[in-house]
Image (cartoon, helix red, strand yellow):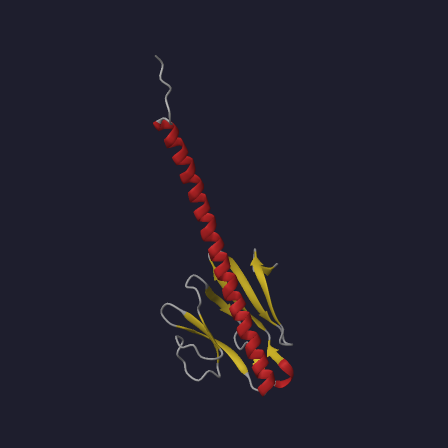
Length: 157
């Protein structure tokens, strides 16, 4: 009498588990890269929004908003010199606290900021960097705020 075997052998199960583990590791790596890219993009948009808010306030109230980066041991904040206090960890107006620990401001043009008269600005840029890449927030003399990805040797795409 012949009996028909049901199920899979141990070798077959091990091969399937190895394939699933390799695919899962690749997916996890891709997911982490995507998260890093999103954190960098979100921080770039926060910086751009802060600059637009400062530009509007400088134009509306005819006052100067010069930018400064304040750093503590583990974090940074981007703020206007008109902010009342020098505390980075408070959520005050005209201040952006570092939203993600893996995104850093690596370069800022000295004296960059807005002047109230006719919506003018001191031109410059702010360079944000993480493991996912670099983004530059560019401020023109007319007060326009633009964002571009840095590819290669510090050239915007």
